[in-house]
Image 1 (cartoon, one colour):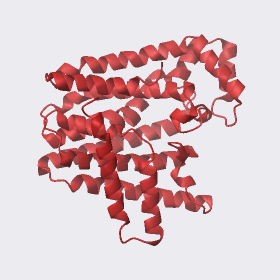
Image 2 (cartoon, one colour):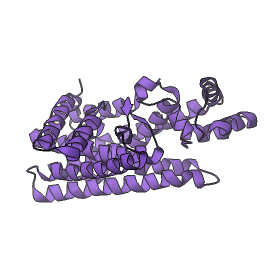
Image 3 (cartoon, one colour):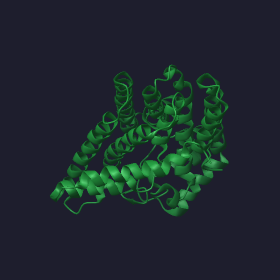
Image 4 (cartoon, helix red, strand yellow):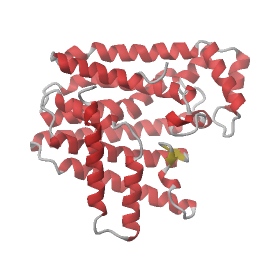
Length: 336
């Protein structure tokens, strides 16, 4: 078993303790929101971000209770961002259950208002959790700055993603940039840097060479899973990304490689709700038969290999090298 992955259960336990403490003495809408945040945050999830934070810490320090507790700040940060993201995308489901704004039985505007404020609370909690741990002040300040930078870059990536459909033509480079801003920093790079800063690791800048390409590879594989996975794995309808009009390497490669008629067929349904299962299956067949699926998988593999090749820069400890390789493999080895 992975050295770092074994801490997932401890991360879950720490999250439970945090929310239980928050619920004590509360009533009314405050208690209802905290309880809803607890259910939403603890529903499923692989705790990837906390585990990468723990991994970054382990590069320079033994894993201890402080970093386990500090790592749950990233789950609260994620809840904050996911709640906003689901409102923006009008997504009805998340992790196999209702999106946060669908957990309330008021009129739509009030449901969304409660959810936006709840997300703001989750953001405040994430900072509170991190700051409540006994790390050297200089290390803690650097980790806090890394968290703020991560949220900032995620926000910029989200803005780019929201406005992308307004463009007449989207390029592969633009999609990759969104992946860097919205996924790589938020999922791998930022969490690892936070942990590394907390441990006093001297080569934090080198984590970019691992975290950025691995985050891109992860997002490309996630987009493939979004097209060829299943609802149980995704926790949402398999057609959701396509119906939202999400521009991915997979779609752009299909536009480059497929026939004119097949491209017209894809564009007929892309970004429109209510595609039938048979039409969606035809879209998937076009992407695969055109060679776009294979080309996209090759791209994900190239970014993965780039991340793997950077590992000797980060450590020469054989156990930690193996763990960095294992974590990278776990990120991208999710679909054949």
